[in-house]
Image (tube, rainbow, N blue to C red; front, side, top):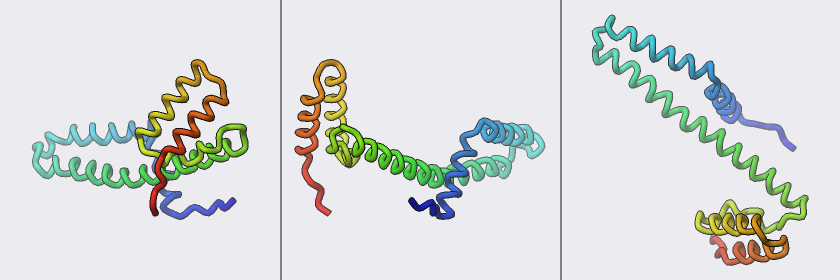
Length: 141
């Protein structure tokens, strides 16, 4: 398996990891406190307010893309791991790819699984899931 990761992926992973740490939160709070304390020194001017507004807007804007990249890769990796577990177990192979079903179908499958957890045997569950997945119309590419 290739371990090649592009520079942006490495960067986004590192930022996601560090941004979620308590020390990072503490630094952010400290920066806001310092900004607030300096208000009287700058007469609570528009420029003083603009500093924090611009800084937080830029950080938020950039973090959306960085964290989204990290979450997408994590989601794809988890999905691949789950697919591998399904393929190598006695689980129903039709579960592979159900993440592409619409929300209504996924909720329906979830309800079937919840009902099964309470009462039914594996054969009946496999039949219900197979019917539910087969009813999904094929997507045109």
